[in-house]
Amino acid sequence: MERGLWPRIRTVGFDGMLVSFGDRLSEPANRAALAFRAAVEKENWEGVEESSTSLLSCFLRFDPLARSHAEIEAQLRQLLGRTDWYAEALPKGRRLWRIPTVYGGDLAPQLDEAAAVAGITRDEAIRSLSQARVRVQTIGFAAGQPYLGELPERWDIPRQQALTPQVPEGALAVAIRQLVLFSVTTPTGWRHVGQTAIRLFRPESETPFVLRPGDEVMFPSVSREVYENMRTSGPDGGAEFEALK
Image 1 (cartoon, one colour):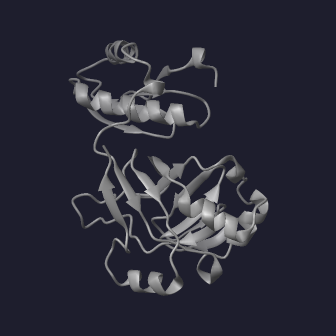
Image 2 (tube, rainbow, N blue to C red):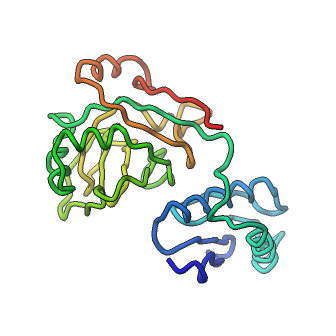
């Protein structure tokens, strides 16, 4: 990413603006998107109806009858000029989650394959993944589903060329230095390396998405017996969190 070319402001349809901080995933670009979105929310601009983030961008939807693209763009440029968003502090209110995970076996049958592609042993793979502390970079693909990263460089492994027909809710999968924790049962091209008991999407709740962009997550290794007990312990599936300062 050439920093001189970023960030960029673009229009999205008749009621949207997109501020992008790069053309490929990196920690600074994701940090910038999260921090900038928090700043936009704090500004509470008239006519801006919602904001959200992707891996690299902040999206704003506004009322085109109340505000023009040019007016919103001018405010965005002014806000962008206030600080170096790539080095800005992450938003407050984040949490560190620990989500117990069974690695490998019949519950997560692609751990050995993923380890081989990464050039490490099975035990090394479990140790690396269970000790990694990753950020929720964005929520996407399915309701409440987080993309988490970045993992160490050894995990810069490609997706599979063919789809796995189905992984269950709570599956932990790996590719391209990221983890995905699936909120639904779905096909995937990512390798299924771990299984959790957490339910990420809770439509009956006032806060239906359990994880939020900016949260940090660890996936400590547990036994199959512990996992089976957690499955009946409630929707958190043994997961716990603490506030981050």
